[in-house]
Image (cartoon, rainbow, N blue to C red):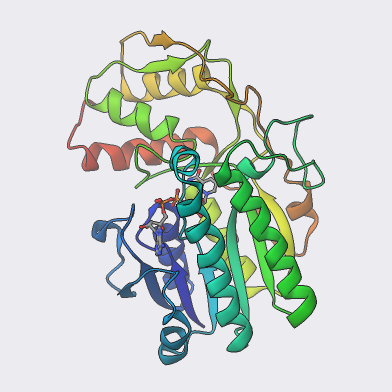
Length: 311
Ligand SMILES: NC(=O)c1ccc[n+]([C@@H]2O[C@H](COP(=O)([O-])OP(=O)(O)OC[C@H]3O[C@@H](n4cnc5c(N)ncnc54)[C@H](O)[C@@H]3O)[C@@H](O)[C@H]2O)c1
């Protein structure tokens, strides 16, 4: 299939590009390099430096002969959305609607979209399943929530085939320092370069960390399948910041103690997403990487990327 991967110069998108190519698809990457980098671009994919909000988008998709879309491009973090909700909405709502219109008008086969656990807000119970109320606590979470309803309505009105994945905390090689749930990439960089790590609060806060390669496999299988709907994408394994710190320290051979800063206001203490729905679906996807394996892969990448080898 000829697949457009938006955000393919970013962290998650670049792994999806690799997976699409591995599965034999033709790939076109669309990215405006707002947070992505040219280093992440796979040379086997065609690169279009373009904004998803661009009104010429539909013509470009038509000219490229795109058959399906995996949409990762986004204003991808919480703080900028609080500072500038309009910009967040321009990219995450209008940009996505621009793509949905192209899918509709060109009758593309499918669109797979990166939603977020941020659309749930504070968990009322864990593990959080797809029926859990969505009460986001940021404009980023709100735009991820609202756009899901556009996918559903495009499906109801025009038969648009779609999958939305609500990602847990994605980690792995190529992750930057400022993304959602980037504690693993921050600690990895700091430990490999001999800096002190700061843990916000008591370190007991938990997250569900999913390896980026597992996220990429789910996206490509969803694109190839006839499955529609909204699914959590998670490991359903709850891990605390202290555990992440401990595991990384041991693997890297880092012997400094962490500094404890104040807990971040409004931070969620426990977060873990149920993956029952996807496991019960006709998708064969299962998370494959254990946290230990994923951390090893992240460290191996970090050693070459940060030019530090303390082993
Ligand atoms: N990383 C996580 O833990 C996580 C968790 C939940 C959801 N997500 C979602 O997954 C997707 C990928 O996130 P990521 O962590 O790889 O972030 P990222 O910032 O590395 O990737 C986003 C990419 O989109 C590009 N982009 C931004 N605005 C654009 C625009 N207007 N037009 C074209 N390209 C644009 C950026 O340059 C970047 O390459 C995002 O939709 C994000 O909201 C990520």
